[in-house]
Every structure is written in structure tokens, then in C-alpha cells.
Image (tube, rainbow, N blue to C red; front, side, top):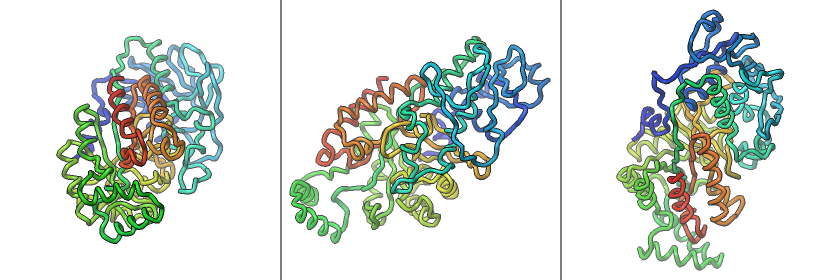
Amino acid sequence: MLNKQGLHALLNLELKSDNAFVLIYATELSPRLDYVCGFIFNTVLKLNYRITNQLNDFKASHELKINYSAELIPNVFSIHPHGLLSEKGIQENKPEAFFKNDHLYFYPNQNTNETTSLHFDIFSAVFYFISRYEEWQRYSKDKHQRFEAAESILFKHKLLQVPVVDRWILEFKLRLLAQHPTVNFPPKQFKLISTIDVDNLYAYQSKGALRTVGAVAKDIIKFDFVNLKERLLVLRGKKADPFNIYEEISDFCFELKIPLIYFFLFKSGTKFDRTVKPNSGAFEKVFKLIKQNWALFGIHPSYNSSQNKELLKNEIQLFSKVSACKTILSRQHFLRFDIRSTPNLLIQNGIIADFSMGFASMPGFRAGTSHPFYYYDLSEEKVKDLLFVPFCAMDGAYTVYEKIDPQTAFHSMFELAKEIKKTEGYFISVYHERSFSNHLYPGFGTLYKNLHQKLKEL
């Protein structure tokens, strides 16, 4: 299965040492500045960088240079520091937005030279979003104790469906090129990854006698004879279980060369955790099939695991044992994720990449970017070894929250992909096993295939 090096290759995070180099001058060095420069230059622009506070060395350098200070340095591209990156801890004041040429910005700079400087502090603005600063600040949690879309500053400015951080970095790149046209920015490509959250391994199979009898009785009491008929056909072996999509979807993605990652819920017996029992033997067969079809998989930690150290530990240990693989990828069930505690729990249990960075209720860019970024722990003021891989579109936003038709959902997701294409980012979709059931969500199984085939052509 996947290791850290393989993950970096999958996500195109590798950086060549002979790529172009940028030197940044700052009078105040800080872990915040180093963190955001790592994201902007290494991850997005694919440039090497170094930060220095030695002015004479900076002036003597013939590399591409950026002045991030209040000092005036002639003929050097400048960004005036707003102050956020030299602070420590969390302030409750949110940054004020402003618009220029119909584009949203934060942390404005006054009296800037249009040729040699930016009109806003891009380092502070990007840091605010990728550190998830707004999730460290006070906010109103939803009924599942989550930071949801309505609390987002981008939602309040009606720009949640725009990767504003990636737009800023693209604008920054174009400004640098205008002043330094010989700089070679390595080419990047739009990246498509499919992910599937498996909340229930099967709809009807492998549930055990007691659960099956209860489910049959429930169908009868609710007069849901369509579901009852399908259940009995599956149990008698006359029809395939509607949630058993693993071979079909794995083959589909393999043929189109689309990376595919499943996230399996591995707990049962609670109100929100209703999958097949992990010790039933059903999972082993699915894991074997997925491995044979070159798909990847990780864990979907249960509803109460996001703040429960022992629960998360036990689930990951059992999952690793049953799957016969080291577990390094995760996405939280119900996206229950607390920026202050969940990342550290995941790190302690060997997770190196989390795919929870998105919203359940609507499509869009939770951190303003489609690019992966590392966790910055504001309580310790340090970067930690957990990669957030954001998604922009989850099926439930359309089927559960909005209840819209497949055609409208297709248009919405395709428009998101076109926005991502402009900034050479990552379109990561989230589907659930139940969305392939035509009985539950008519047309959404077909939508999945049509969408991913179309996205491969972008």
C-alpha cells in the first residue's frame, strides 16, 4: 500500500532541487512565514525558496528576490507585512475584506507601486486560510459540533465556490513574471482524484440474522415493499447488493487512470455508525478485491472518534490488522473534525494525510484552495506532519442538503472543476456507496461515471 513517498508522488508534491529559486527578505523571521512560503512556493508554484534577515546578502543576491518588510529596497518586488505572521496565538478579530477589480482580498497595503508590489499582504491572507485560523477563532457549531459552511468568511462573501487562495497565488505568479520574465515556473497539470466514503459496506448482506430480521420488519411496518423486495432478492442471491460497487468502480477508475481512494467506516452499533461488523469477515474480501484492482483505501474514523483518543486508536489498530496494511489515510465520518484536537489524535495514530477538509452542506473550498497543505498548530506555533487534502464536492451536499437533480449537480461540479483547472489545482470528489443505488438516489450512479469521464477531458 501507499507510503509517504508514494503519497507525495500521487499528489504531485515532489519538488526538484534544480527548480528556480526565490530569496525572501524579512526583518522578522517566524514559523508562520516559513509555513506559508512553503505552501506558496514549494507546493503551488514549485519553486525553491529561502528566507533571510541579512539585508546585505539579500541585496547582493542575483536570484529572484522578494522584499517582505517595511524597508524600501529599489527595484525589488515588495510585499508589505500586515503583522499577522509576527504574532503568536489567536486573535478574535477577523480580517476585513476589500474588493479590487471585482476580486476579493484581505490585509490591504496602502500606497503600493502597481509595478513592483502587491496591493495586499498575500502571505498573511494565505496563512489565515490554510492555517484554518477562522476555525481556531470562536464560531457557532452545527448540530454535529462542526465548523460548517455558513460560518466561513468566504461563504459570507458568496465566494465559497471560488478557490480564492489559488487565484491570489496565480496573480502573484503573473506579477513576478511581469518583472522577471526569464524565471522558469515548472508546468503543472489539473489533477483528478476520486474518493468514496463507505459508511455501510453492504445494504443487505453480512448484517447478521438479528439485524436482518429487524430490517425486514421495519420495511413491512413502513410499507416499503420496494425496499423489501430488493432486500429479499439480494439475500436469496438473485440480485447483487446495491452497495457492492467495489469491483465496478475500481475497474472504471483503473481504466480511466483516475486515482481512487476508499474510506471505510470500521465501527458499528451506534446511532451514527451502522456498517457491517468489522469482525464479520466481510471486509477482508472487499480489501482483497480493492488491492487487486489497484485502488487505495484508508479509514473513515467513527462519529465519536474525533475527540476520543482511545476510540480512534482502537479503530485504526483493528483496521490495520484486518486490512493487513498500515493505515495512513483518513477522512472523518460526518466530517466531525475539530482543528484544535483531531489533527493531533490522527498524528499520534500514524495518519499522515487527512481528507476531511471540506463541507457536508455545500460544495466549495473550505480553505480557499484545492491544493494540499500541512497542519499548522496555532497552539504550538509549528507545522506538523499531517497533510490536509481538501475536497470541493460531496454527493451529500446535492442529495441530502439541497435535494437537487443529477443534471444540476453535474453542472455544479463541472463548474467547480473549471475553476480549479484555471489554477492547475486538484479536483477531489467525494461519493458514498449509497449514492450508486438507483433505488435511493436515481441517476447519481450514472452521474458519477459521466462526470469523471468528462473531467478526464479537461
